Image 1 (cartoon, rainbow, N blue to C red):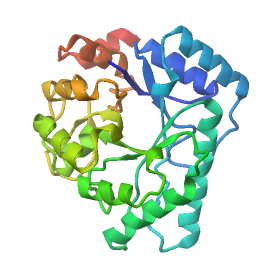
Image 2: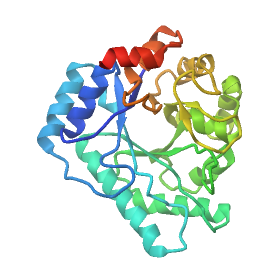
Image 3: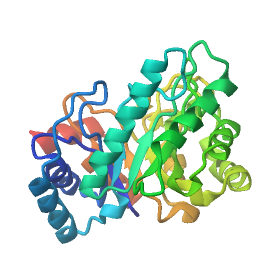
Image 4: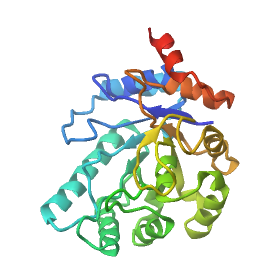
Length: 293
């Protein structure tokens, strides 16, 4: 099981992220290189990166399984304002350069929002933007995330994912990140996850799945809301998520928790314990208070 969670990328940069992941009992993690809501970024510290890489080796974290997430403000779908579209392209290029410095191989990207554009135009805008970003020398792979369908989000079903992938030139440098909450909220029944994987295999190919965000959902299937819930505390349910986590076809794919904090506590250590034991913890909040008191 390659399992981890979202962790902070603070003053100690990648080293701090790795240390937090180890404290959770994780063997991978996901991070943003700065706040996901803005473009403020500090330079990557080569010394901290080297320390992080050594630390990860010592603690059996394979850097090839570590994931970066691009900030939410990137919108590759809408091109009504050419300057804004070009800014998104430039900023994502910069994020890719930053993770290349750290030796990170994957960056998850929300495809974007069509806003007033028709969806097909928006999907082609995303593909064109990625064609402008990627070069034969680009090392990290862009992972397009499956979205819940909130507002005018793109990437909400297999058809839209396939349209984007089909129009990207350097196909070997682009993959998919599944998100269980987003899938549920877009209308996919996670209780029938194998059926979804069969459709995915026939339409796109399972080899394109490079990361899975493991989240329960606060809303019913098909709600198009995108509100994450803690493991087993939502409408998807613990057993259905365990079946995703332990699906043999995805055994080598990193799984990342993005579940919400409870009060002021990160739940990831206890949720990873649940995953490893395959036993639901009905006392998560109390156990967290005990753990962090």
